[in-house]
Amino acid sequence: MPSWAQAALRLSRNKWAQATFGVVASGSLAYLVAHNIVWKEVAEAFLDFPPELALLALVPLAAAFALRASRWHVLLHRERVTFWQVLLTQNTGLGFNNLSPVRMVSEPVQLAMINRRYGVPFPQAFATLVGENVLDIFATALMMGLGVLLSPGVRASNANIQLIGAIIMFIVSALILTAVVRGAVPWQNRFAFLQRIVVGFTELKEQPLRLWLSLGVNIAHWLLLGVCGWLLGLGLGMDVHPVTMATILVAATFFTSAVPSVPSGLGTYHFAVITMLTESGTEQVAALNFALMMHLLVVLPPTAIALIMTGRMSMGTLRDPSGARHGASGD
Figure (spheres, rainbow, N blue to C red):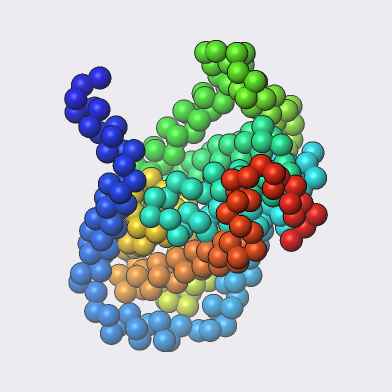
């Protein structure tokens, strides 16, 4: 391997370097969208926001959060795990991810918690979580493709780049999953661990209706987030169709997950949302207020759940296999 490649690999494995790069990237993107803002106008627009619309926006937001958990729960129907336990597990992982300087802890936390706290066998937990994530990538590509087709503003923005990225990620993920299920992974039969994973994926493949249901729930989740954003936009004087809003939020979430940033995606998320909204014809002050409000709505609930669950279970639950069945009866 060339020396420059080895250096790049070492840098990618250095958590401090990743965190530092995230701070620089987030700060730079935040500066790009906020350096010309008149903050007095931002404060006035925020104070003039109708409180009834804020309360109304919470309804589709809560439904979207419920559907986000349902897209995994429907794939776990053979396991003795409740919807509430899945919702707590998923949001705990997302909350830890929001708090972590290196935003790659969501899936490991979810796997450990669903396996060791609620007793779901690891192969099934792993297969369904990966399957859910692949379906989310597929739904992301579909939603952004729909937005590019229906919205001139989205076509003019940099969402096209994110759409291409989502499609590439879906193709790569699908190829990897196909290789695992078909036994095309080298030395697969020599390791019991890999064999158990293959069994999990095979069981998942044998329930196509559940896969389609999870995909449909996934798309409905994003559409409901679009409705939530549309209601917030109405209070800020924005004229953005719910489907266009859903596309912008999907693209912003994908951008935030793909670019290193500080915890919760501060700066990075706002840059993506504001850039696409302003290129769709929204005034910058309204776009900034919307980005701040929407970010709080999507980040605070899972972060609060993660903090609550941290107080209810020790970190040993995520490390000690003896805690596998602890709390499996409910929370």
